[in-house]
Each structure stands twice: as structure tokens, then as C-alpha cells.
Amino acid sequence: MRTRCGLQPHCLGGKWAVGTWRCLDRLNSVISVNSLVPLLQTSGLTKEFQGFRAVNEVDLSINEGTIHALVGPNGAGKTTLFNLLTGFLAPTSGTIRYRGKDITGKAPEQIAHLGIARSFQITSLFDQLTGLEHLELALASPTGLGMRFWRSEGQMGQFRARSLELIDQVGLVHLADKPAGSLAYGQKRALELALALALEPSLLLLDEPTAGMGLEDVNRTIALVKQVAKGRTVVFVDHNMHVVGSLSDQVTVMQQGQILAEGSYEQVRLDENVITAYLGQAHA
Image (cartoon, rainbow, N blue to C red; front, side):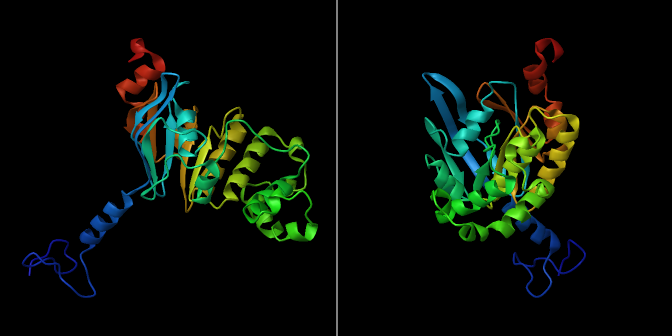
């Protein structure tokens, strides 16, 4: 019997050897194929506004367990694409599939229940509520309690332990009882991330998570995103190339609503088309 990997018998007569030992490179090939099945995939995704195509025939694949960056000049269609993926906009044409199922046209709350959560460019917190109260309401929402005007402290207390876990996860446990309006900008963004995590998402979409931050907050947010990415898939938009290079496994560059380039950060930053898109023809 012939061998290839040197560890155990390989195939003979076109059949794989059976038994406790199996070929490691055969196993690795199976793992490799499975890992390439996209968690989220779009096909021909298009969004028109009165004849203007903000997103134009986009074919995007997001692999499970990766951190995937969407970058491009202002007006490239990145936020519109996020709004399509999360149901805040309905596509003009094309499809969106999540775990192989067509979710095109589903409402935001339906998509959230599937395990897809997102943050927004602009913070939208209640200034008078504490961070802990925000998280208790987020956790109560699927139960219906979050929509009741009158609710007892005892009813909301069931969410206290998980709320404390979430606020500790984003490094704000020492500010849990402070009103959101008193938090610094970077702390507000961290609280919004905790709110997204309250949905227990398997896919987390972050729209410019470091926008408007100073260097210290940017580095803190990079570390935070790396931490929350463990065990889930993250897609983010950011203009800060330090953030993109520090976080991303895969980068998709958009221009004028279309995909311009894809690959690792090192690959796309050396791509002539990307250089031209960012710096102009004279620098290409």
C-alpha cells in the first residue's frame, strides 16, 4: 500500500483506507472546503435611488469566523450596503443569503432574530438612562417587557446578571450606574457595542466603530473588537487604515457602488486600482 503523508496508509484502488487513522491532508482538505462556505453572501445586489445606483451588482462573500473590512472613499456605497444587509433598505434587485437561506427583503427585527446585529455611525443612546439600564432594556426586548410602560424592578432584575457581564466585557463595569449622557464619546461607542452583543449575534456589523476617536480610544476599540470577535464573525466599515490593517482577515474595497478589489490588507493596499481610487491617477 502506497503512502503520501508518511503517517499512515493512503488510498489503494481509488478507495480511502478505513480505520482509526485517516490521512491528515485529506482531513485538512475537507476542513478547508467547509471553511470556504460563506456565512453571508450577496449576488447581484443593487440599490437605486431615483436612477442613481448607490450599490451596483455587488457579489460579496463573508466567511464564518473572520473579521472582514469594507473600505472605500466617501460615497462608495459602504453604509448603503450595510443598510441592505440588515434590512433597513430593500434592494432594487439581487439576493442576500445568510447560512444559505434567502433573507432578501426581511425586516430589521427579523434579521436581528437570525443572529445579525449592527452598530451605527452616530450614537443613539438615552442620556438619562445608565449603561446598565440600556442593557436591561435590550435584553428584555425579545420577551416583550421592554415595550411595557409599567414594569416592576423585580421583572427587570432577571436581566441584571447578564447586563453586568456585557458591560464588563466592553470595559465599562465601573461606569455601569452612570447616565449615558455623562460618558465620553469612546465609552458611548463601547456601550453601543455591548447593546449589539446583547442580541447574542453570530454576525456583527460595525459601521465606522472608531469614527471621531482619538488615538487612545482607537487602540482601545481595536482591542475590544478583537475580543468580541472570538467565536463570531465581524464585518466593519472604517476609514482608518491602521484599524483596517490591525483587525481584518479580509478586505473588500468599494468604489462608486461596486467592488474594486478584494484580498488581504497587504494585497489591497498595493493594488494599483485601489491606490488610484484613494490618491488619484497621478499617484498610481
